[in-house]
Image (spheres, helix red, strand yellow):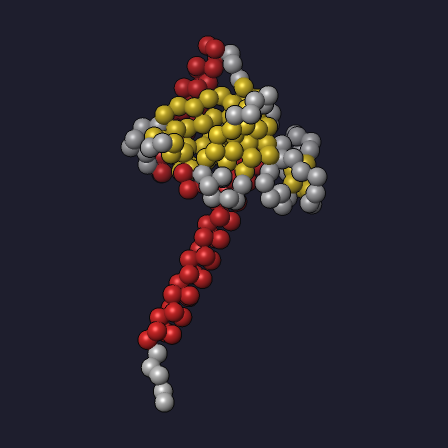
Length: 181
């Protein structure tokens, strides 16, 4: 669930789950159970991302049933490009950062929408990280927060590119303009 003390709150759309989430939380934090990580084939195709993600969820779910270990973690979503998604294990100071530019895909599972996964490039390998939430709305909220963070960061990058281009053009006009006497 997103945690914050300020800002307008919005009620979940489902009557099944009671609760609120932050509407404009700058860096929302969510709590989940970490099911694990698995490598993704090098032949990743974005149009098959849901299918690939579902296979990774199945693989991790089977391994988890055998071991029974689910670690409680918190996920912080940031619009800071280099800090995009921060994964912190509860009771530990260890943090893992996944830059927004390295995240290729995120979604809730098609069969169990309380499961959230994302595919990211980690040290040259594509990995799928899978999390289980208490309800579907929480998993969807994480997915939307990450999507919104990416959109915001991309918009800021585009504005920066536009400003830099305008500065470059104005510098060229200054150096090229003829001097009238």
